[in-house]
Length: 359
Image (cartoon, rainbow, N blue to C red; front, side, top):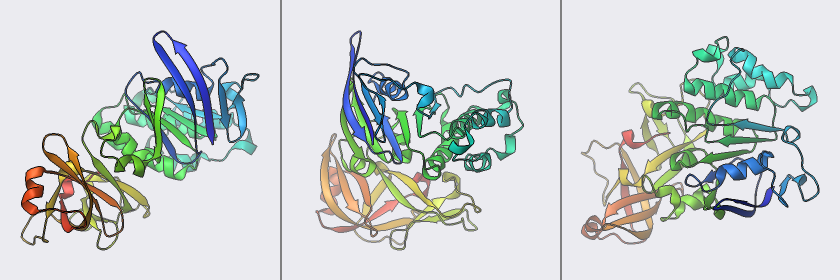
């Protein structure tokens, strides 16, 4: 477990936390700007020393009332909004900078593994000023990983990137999270980043923690803060097939299978089959009482309505289950629900356009 207890007063802002969470997977600190996410991360890292604060990592005290372990002794990997690479070194030089300074007995990740994980093979000899923003952040991630940290702290690593670059780097972050076996704390105020990367969510507001829950629990709540920007969404787990001759991949298991355009996913024909995520906005799903045959929408999934939630503006949110037991949220109008006479326990068909599915 990672345990933190701290109270910090700075002007009109007060941070007051007494919390803990497991050291597995990706933990997202989520909240609006100014809620205290970065301050909490700095306390974990040892960049912020708080009077009477307490930080414990896997049963080892990093800070108590009597002791304070310096940041360099906590064996952390830190990546911020800006890559901050060493300009006089090549990509390879930057990657090896921390690796060569890590005692051999502490090295758990090797350069070739990290280079492949982050797709850095094609620009190892480039100068850092020849890199795009996304490439530079991937190098920064690789440099942090090659110190073999006990904990990886990411402070909004995608915030300075444009939308297209974020989409390009997101799969690499996802792969890093699943393959490195290093616990990650990710600061973000982007619901999409949480939905695509996090295993659990720490919801922060005005210097306090409102809740800590796993991603499935967070997504099951129709009033979740994760839905504030784009509305309710579902995250489905499954394996992508290789694309067919029409550039379409199959996702998931039989009777709960989706067809996804290759342009929307990061997998390539040479990528081993691994579990991945598809994000489906509830507003992109329609409902039919019968399986329509003469229709352009290819994804027809049989679902069972489990709950019906009220939303503003005469809208309803249907919480349904797929044949494989996963949850799919569907947003429709009250008029549509009345016309179809939808009821809890009813079996219906969920219709999803392939272009609405993004990995």
